[in-house]
Length: 264
Image (cartoon, rainbow, N blue to C red; front, side, top):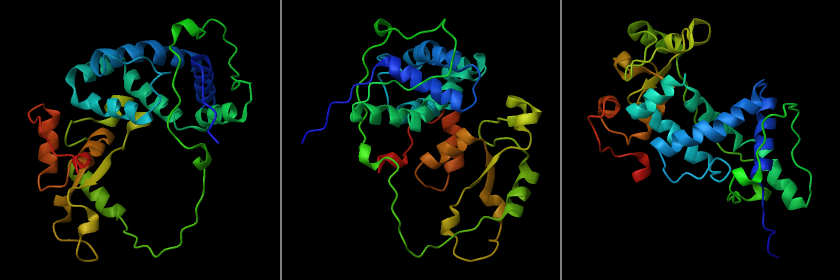
């Protein structure tokens, strides 16, 4: 028996997005939705995809994650994001997370069940609305409804690799809380209260390749502090002996071609 065609309107998606934001305790949920629909959509068209049809048409969270990962590597996108006080990167993340949220998936489950009610929004602001004429009709995403939230018990023997927090701290003592690729300091970017003493530490040589237990020789040479964006990007580069150098060259725009894991 063929599955019923799933059709969800832009208005329903907007209400579900606002409900998701309210659940995250965002007091300005409707303003965030407005920014995502308009300013963020225009940002995407200008810098990433001229054919972008709108957030309620493109419903692949990976699409927004890819654009987010481009911002620190593209100077124009980076400048525009910083001029907007990082709102573009923040809203890309929020909308990507919404596309994986229970509010979004429940929207399609209700349609499949034949329910006519829309996801409720507790917002009382009436000045902002999503009329049908303003948004193209979205298409249904490709996922299997029956697998959402499915649990499987898998029993197997696992080898656990532990990380030593003392070694991490020694790396930070050596370099400080500044990204060793782009120079970002979370405290300077987000303020002392939120960003102080925050950084990620990357193993230049994967810890899983260590041949012996205990602390390896010259372990500090294998550790480097990176911001979250640069840490994600260095893991996107296919393993080689010079991943940090390659990452720095890519950040400065000096290296146009890199072999990434998706090329395999």
